[in-house]
Length: 101
Image (cartoon, rainbow, N blue to C red; front, side, top):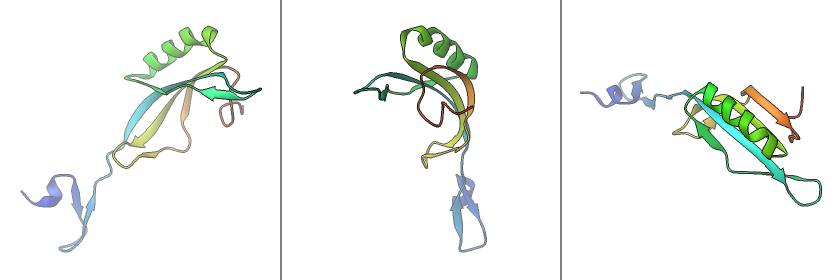
């Protein structure tokens, strides 16, 4: 099997480029009080579905200063994430860009 058939695309006989494997990731981000009036981000929680991310955010909202659940297209291997995530749920105090309407 040629090398480009396993995750590589051939742009000619001497040029092989990796195939970008994009997938949708669902993330829950919560915020607690930091120093002064600052918000401190807790570790992000990855979820399997949009519905799971939204439900977890709704349950966590009364317990944190702010929460946001979002979906983003990402190439996990390259660490490349979409610059315009889709907000699934948000509540409370949030830092930019989440606090923009």
